[in-house]
Image 1 (cartoon, rainbow, N blue to C red):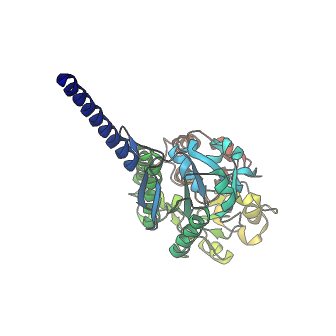
Image 2 (cartoon, rainbow, N blue to C red):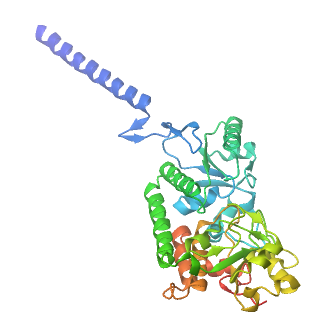
Length: 387
C-alpha cells in the first residue's frame, strides 16, 4: 500500500512539472509574438523613417497603400506590387496620354480600391475601410521637411495606421540621389525586398558610370551645346520650359545653355534661347498635350526661332518626358542614351537607343514598354522632329 502511494505521488509530480513547463512555453510565445522563431501577425518593429520620425510597424508587412506622387513607382521597382491593396485616383483614371512605365507594366492597379485623390490628398475613411498594415508616403524635393512630417503625422493620427514618410529624391543632384537610394533601401527592407533594392542601386550606378565613361575625356571646349524645351512639370509646357540641371545632358557631358538658371525647373526667356543658339535642341514630347501643339509648333511658327542653328541644320529631336507624377528614373536613363547617341554618335556607336530603353524599362518595371510608352506621344520620341 505504501509503495502504491509513493507511485501516485511520483506520477502527480511529473504531471505538475509538465503543466508548469507548458505554461512557460505559452507565456513566452505570447510575450514575444513569435512561433518557432517566426514573427506573428501581432509582432512589431520600431523604425526611424526618412524624416527621422519614430514609427512602430508590423514586423511582417503584407498590406500596403502608397500616398504621394511616385510612391507606388518605388513599390513597382521593388517588385512588391502584390502587397498593394489600394491606390489613389491617378491609377484609376485612364490617362489620355500615359507617361508612366510602371503603370503600363501594371494595369491591375486600376482595379484596386480607391484611397483618395492623387498627390497625397488621401481619404482617411477609405484607407481605414481598406485596412492596410502600413501607409508608405513620399514627399517631393520641393516640399519642406516640416510640412512632410506634419502631413505624415496628421494622416497617421486620423487613420491609426502607421505612416512611413520618405523623400522621393532625384538623379540630378548628389543629395537627391542619396535620398532616392535611401528610400529604395528603406522600402526594400520593409517589404522584404532588400536584395532587389541593392540590385537596382547597383544598376543605376553602373548605367550612369557607363554613360559618363563614354564622354568623360571630351574637353569642355569641344563639348556640344544643347537645350531641352517643353519640359513637363506638373503638366505639359511650351518651349521656354526647361531644366537647368537636366540629368541626360549632365550624364553625357553636353553643355546645357540654360545651366546657369538654377537646378530645378525654370522658364527661360526666348531671347536667351536665340542668343545662346545651341547646336542641338531636344523637345520633351510631353509638350504635345498642349492644345496648340506646344513647343514643336512654337519652333515652326515663331519667326524668332527660324534663325536657330539647330532648326536650320535639322538638329531638333524628340525626347521622352520623365516628369510624370514625379520622376520616372528609368526614362531619365533611357533619354541619356538617346542624347549621347545623337550628340556624340561615335561614342555610342554600339548603342541602339530604343533597344537600350527596353533593357532599362525591363530592369525597372519588368517589361519592355518603350514602344507602348512612345506610342502615347505619336512615337515622336527618340527621333528627329521636322520643323
